[in-house]
Length: 180
Length: 316
Image (cartoon, each protein chain N blue to C red):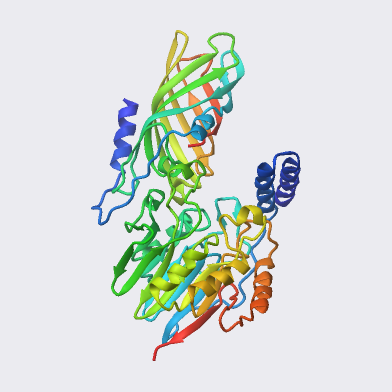
C-alpha cells in the first residue's frame, strides 16, 4: 500500500512539455569501472533486541524512472544510472543485499521502491530519499521503511532503515557510498 | 575550527599522495589544495559595474570570472559558462567574488555551456539566472545533466549551427572531455565544444576548455572569416604533462589566437577556482611574459580583472 502511495506521489510531481528539438540519448551501459564500483559496500550499524551490530550494504538498481529529466530523453535506466538522473528526481526498484555481524542469518536482503527528491542544485548537492521494501533474513520477514539524505551528487549519504517485524534488525543506519 | 580541520585534511591528503602512485598523488594534491581554501572568503571585486549595458557598443565583454563572460553584441546579450556560486562541485571554493551579480544581468538572449564539468555547468548558477535565459545552448549529450529546466535546452553537436533572431551560433571543435561524474566518460565522448557567435557582422569565438590542436584554431579562423574576439583559456598550466591533454597554457593560447586570426583576445579560465597546481596570479604572469616574447601588446590581448569590461567596437 505504501509503495503504491509512494509511486502515485512520485508520478504526480512529474512535469512534461513538448520537445522542440532533438537531443542525444546517452548510451549508458555497463562498464568494467561501473562493475568494480558496485562492489564498494556502505558501512553502518544496526540495532535490535540483541543489541548493536555492524552492517555492510550493497545496492543494485534493476530499473529506474526519472521524473524530471528533459522530456525528450528516455526516463528509464537499467542498472547503470547517472548520479544526476537518480538524485534529480526518480523512482527506482532496488535490491539491497546486506551483511550483519549478528549470531544467525548474517546475510539478508531488501527489495523495494525508493524515490529521490532533489533539495539543492537539482539534487547534485543534496537530495532526499524515501523507500519502502520487503526484507528477508532467513525465515524472518518484515516490511522495511527507509529515509535518507544524499550529498556530493549521491556519492555519500546516510539512510535510516526501520524493520518493525524483525527484532534483531529493527533499526539500521547506513553511511551510503554509491558510485552510479 | 573549520580551517584547522581543512588544514589537517590537506596535510593528510598530501601525505597520502606522497606514498601513493603518481595519479593518486595528483588527485590527492588537487584535493588538498582545494581543502586548504575551502572555507576562505573570496577576494572582493573592487569595482563592480552596476549596469553592464554600454550604450553604443557593438562589441563589449565583461569578465565575470573563470569561463563566465557577458558579451554585448549590439542589442543582444550572450553569457558563456555561467558560474556564480560560491563553490563548484561542492569542494572547489571560489577565490574571487563573481565580477557581476546574477541580479545585475540583463535578459540573456543566449547562454552557452561549453561542457559538463562542474566549473562550466553549474546547476546552482542556472537556478539563479534561469528566469533571465531565453535560450540555453549545450554541447551534444548535455541535456541529460540539466533536469528541471524551465527552458528546454538546445544541444549543438560540433559543426552544427543554430540561429535565433539574427544571432547565429556554431559549435566548433575543441579538444577536451565530456564527462561530469567520471564513469560517464565512457559514453559522453562528444559532450564538449567551442562556439562561434555571429551577429550583424561581429564574430566572437568562445573556446570553452580545450587543449592545443593547431588545425582546430586555423580551421575556425578560415571558416568564419575575420574573427573579432577570441575568448581563450590560459590555465590550468601545471602539472603540464597531464594538463596539456586538456588545456592550453598561456603560450599555446597566444598561438591559438594568432592561428585563429582574431583581432582581439580575452584570456579566461584562471584565478577563480583551484583546478591545478598553479599559484594565484601565475597564469596572467606567464601570459604577459609570452606576450612580451611575441611582441603582442595589451591593445590586442587584454587581461581583465574580475568584473572588468572592455568595449572592443562601437556602432558606426
